[in-house]
Image (cartoon, rainbow, N blue to C red; front, side):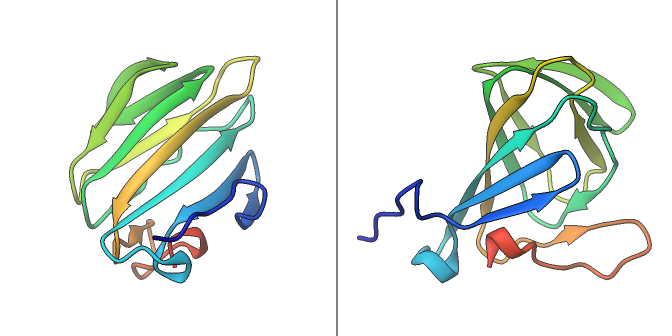
Length: 124
């Protein structure tokens, strides 16, 4: 059973977001991926989808999720379940950073407008 130390987990920096790869096929997972996101203040809730169900658990701070046009306030301790192929976005319009953990089945792919589906690098 592999143990992924948080200190050794790979990080991926994007505008407004840092993703820390936890469980993924490249780190020994065969069925489920998990990663941690640090969301900076001012991150917009850009719409996208995934081709598998995705679950988010807010660890700290507050976020706004938009699912099929409906806005949802999220705060520490809340979980968000996004069905496969459902357009959604998670943003941080607040003044404080937020953190969350995302869980997605191995092989899940992101679907961005105008792009072919792809596996994010933290899920490989």
